[in-house]
Length: 399
Ligand code: RFL
Ligand code: PHB
Image (cartoon, rainbow, N blue to C red; front, side, top):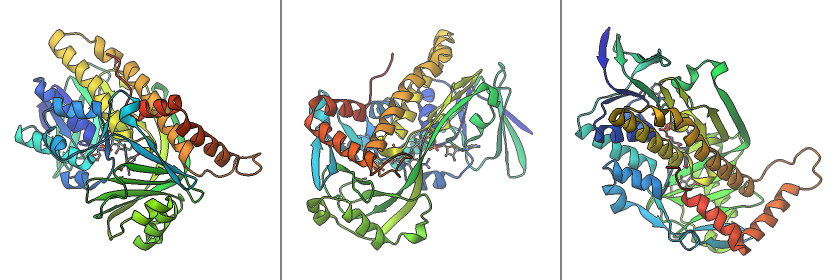
């Protein structure tokens, strides 16, 4: 067995783990990241595309903002499409000048990986049988297998940044953790294609055939989604079927402007709301998807991961520079306060825009009628639009 030592051992090299590692490194805190997959596999996962100002600021603080600032697209608004018409939501005007940015999770991950490699920091990819030990003592450690050998990393703290299916949350006894979960009765089918976007802004569409979203990664690459059944298989969805379904869920003008082309990626994702409480267990701290999942309709998953990492990195830095455990002790409460607000907003956007099966006791599609009334109210009420806008661009931090 090979034993090494670091200050913080980070489980998972997704955006949470890589960003935490980079911020700690810049503060002089040694860390090692242990990831079960290969770097190429991590980069091949197509996920989020919209980042809030606070996430941009954190990437800049981590020293990896350069390419984002050069290549990211600043968006000042979004469009809501329903009853055959699009309505502009002026995020910028309604929030006193705030915006969001289109910059893919893949690009953020690549920038963070490059920064980590050039700083010569240790990342173990393709680690097998990752396990955490003694996390509720002052001598926590992590072990993994690689090429037939067993390795142990001893640390002061363990950061569980290992996503929804990771090992960290699963290692906590059931009695110490409470899970809150809602699984939605549909999924999202997403495709990536090299064609120009339909509009300069994202289009979120509520349609009798189901939800649709026209997003983008650049001026020449789009990411589009349609609500699909949880039973659907990728083989059921040829590119032609996807494009014609998407077209049918847009207003006539957007439909006429829809550029089609071969997909370069296609995947189906289930939608769930999930929170595990608390997020600290002794010297184990959960961050990002390891602790919570939002349905993607509010574009909050990656942003929440960044927000956890902001709180957690500051608490680690306070611990090492001021010898104070206060920030770490308060991490879970602070993070959860912001998480539940993003959970609420993501649930609200999901409820507003998707077709749901009729509820028990419904006569006629009451839910669809409520959505129409809410959308009509929304686009005619500055108060309602402001509420949507301030949540979409990201709520402030508790300092
Ligand atoms: P990640 O990105 O899941 O990274 C966790 C990493 O941990 C590794 N891991 C392990 N490593 C070592 N040992 C183990 N036992 C391990 N188990 C797992 C994994 O291989 C992985 O590399 O979590 P992180 O870093 O917290 O980042 C969170 C974001 O990735 C996530 O919130 C968003 O991508 C969510 N999400 C979306 N968010 C949006 O805002 N917009 C979207 O369009 C959007 N699309 C998505 C998504 C999430 C998806 N998932 C999780 C199914 C689409 C999908 C398909
Ligand atoms: C994306 O571009 O993948 C995206 C954008 C906005 C969302 C969800 C996903 O709400």
